[in-house]
Length: 204
Image (cartoon, rainbow, N blue to C red; front, top):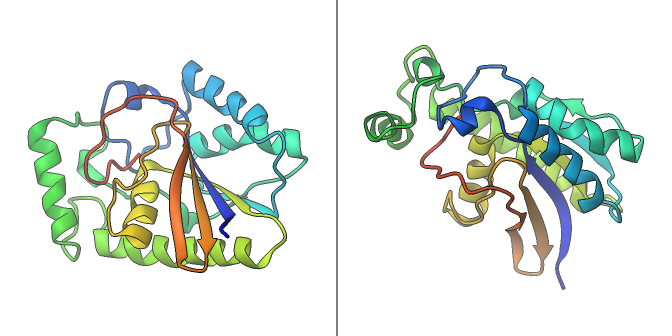
């Protein structure tokens, strides 16, 4: 038998999501559609209880989690380790073929620093440890944890648990669940509200 031990919510839509541009370390707010996606999380989780709530330090994550936290009478604990991959000079640039190819090179060479950004290897070190810590918290508690994150973190969860960054894709405002069974951990997409093409680490 498997049970859900953690929910990971990808933050809602922003203007840069719509324009298909890298977000990275930019602290941009939700747009009107993102606010609607945040509100939609309240009925989606109406019958769920959480043992704790966590998220990145970015405005778009806090705004996504706010309606749900108010509905549950909880507060989200911001964690710097959950911030998006810092895509440096790519932030704000279009995800065209050339830029995606260049950023993919940095993913394939994780010890090389993205110009004005961070090394993918450093991103993995900070994110992987925190993800597993939160998964273990949910596993040992009566109820799962709920965590607000970015597209790059969603991809990392998939890479860690299934060795495939696109195993369970969710778009802005989407929800990923981590299950525990006798076979180990697995992830599934529970809510996929949009159709936004994503490749490599989007830094969203």
